[in-house]
Every structure is written in structure tokens, then in C-alpha cells.
Image (tube, rainbow, N blue to C red; front, side):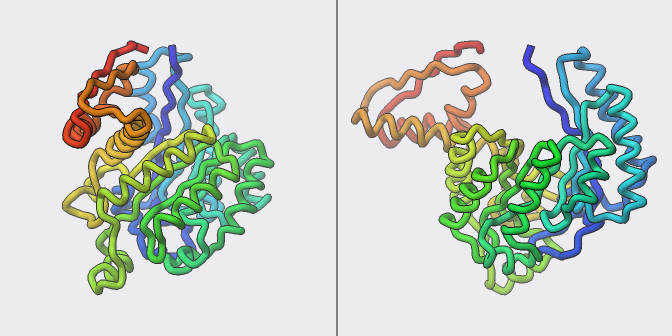
Amino acid sequence: MKQRVFHIPVFVPHKGCPHDCVFCNQRKITGQIEEMTQAKARSIIDSHLETIEKYNDRGTYYAEIAFFGGSFTAIDRESMHELLSLAHGYVLSGRVGGVRCSTRPDCIDDEVLALCKSYGMTAIELGVQSADDEVLIASNRGHTFEDVTKAAKLIKSYGMELGLQMMTGLPGDTPAKSIETAKKIASLSPDSVRIYPTLVMEGTHLALMHQSGAYTAQTLDEAVELAAELVSIFKARGITILRIGLQTTDGVNASTVKGPYHNAFAELVYGRVWRSKIESDIIARSLHDTTYEIDAPSGKISQIIGHKKENAEYFKRKYNIILKLNNTKS
């Protein structure tokens, strides 16, 4: 039986961030308004574990407590100790296998990594966003890609898993720059990545830039096409893609953000990846007016057909080709 992986999210919104990035409104992103305390974190973790343990026999899943939202390694040390101590207790009890956090690359050093390691932290995700320093400056990130490189190497030297997060469509960004960012991220050999298209949220400087015309958001199709290229880059290096696109919440949905938002963004991207593969084969073999058969496991069929069957319709319209999928049930 394939082991399922669960990340139990404990959001520490914006706390610890030394910069206000132009795109950031952590309260909308996380849906978390109140400060995180040890008691609240315990309640969140217990609630998730109750569900995880109820529907999964022990040994068939792996769970990690994940401190997301703000720059976890930059919060005050008292709060950091309290939350890590709580998480470590779950590790020692065997109810979770490890702890991860998200943070900034300029908030990583030997002192903080030694502290995290002592509490059983197993993975750290860095918000890279871009490998282009001009894009980082325009986004008010407050760090350079050299900071990313140093932090990534240091994290790996402590034996922790490395996760890297990137964004597309930032101020000053281009598809070519995003592709170069993906290649540079891949060269750091992370264990996992996340890909987020930039969304315009109320209460951010980016929203003011968008309103004034100083910033133009990606279209949905542009964001999907670019993300599909990035997926191919990471897949070719065997890097796990943990997420594509922000999760839909009360604060992140079609009525609260502008830009390339879609509640099934990842499905659109994976559908585009399959479209590209199939179309390349169709062109190479000069296929038209025929049936194109694919053997595929059930979990991939919806991606191949495309969201709302858009790939099937695309090939029928453009090449008069009918997609026929044979379920391999594996």
C-alpha cells in the first residue's frame, strides 16, 4: 500500500517577516487572523490527527507538523521554542514523523538550524520567489538569490529536507526569467518545490500598482502555460512538486483576488503538460483524423483528458483526433 503523506498546517501569519513584500497579505492567504499560541497549535494538531488516525491504519501514512504562514525562523525565540517544543512532543510520541517550516532565506543560520534540529525538525521550505535580483528588488523581498544559495546549502548540511518555493508573474518578471528561476532552483537539488502564480490581493502594495496600471497580472492561460513548462523542468530532475497555485480559502477565491486565479489551477497545469506531450507526438508522426490511444492509470485520466475535457476537445478541434484512454488500474 502506498504511503500517504500529510502536512498538518499551523499558520503563524506574517509574524517574524522583516519585509512587506508587495504581493503579500498573509491574513488573506492563510485565513489566520489571531496570533498562534501553543494552546491553539495543540488544538489544530489534535484535530488533524484525529481525522488522519481515524481513516488510516498506522504504517500507511506519514504526517508532519508544518509551521507555515510567516517566516518561522524569524519569530521571537520564546514563541519559537514553545511551538517547537509542542511539535517535538508529537514526534517523540510517534504520532507524527517530523516537523517542517517555511521561512525566508535570509533568516537561516547555524544557530537557528541547530535549534530546529534539536526539536526534531526534518524539513525547511524557503520562499525563493525569483532567482532574478531585479525582480526580488521590485517585489521588496529584501534578499538576493545568493542568500537563497547559501541558505539551501546550509539546510542540506544539517541533514534536513530542502523545499523551495517560487512565484511567476512578479513585478519585472518575464516567462524567460521564471524559466531561468526554475533551472537555478533545480540546480540546488531541493527535495521539493511549490509553484505559485502571483495573485493580486486587497491590502497589498501590488493591488495599488495594479490599480494604477504600474503592474499587469498574468492571464490565466499565460500562467498555466508557464507553470506547465516549470513542471517539466522539475519533473525532469526528479524533484517532487508539493503544490501548484494557492489553496482556495475564504480569503483566496474568485471574488477576493485578481489575476490568474482558478480553483483547479494545478489540474489545468497538469492537463497542459499532457497536452504538450501528446501534441508533440502528433506533430512528429503527422497524425490527423484518427484515434489516439493512451494506456493510463485511473489517477491520470482526468489530467490527460483535461479540465472539463478541454484537451479532448482541443485535439478533436485542431487535428480531428479522438483521445481514447485505456485504464491500466495502477
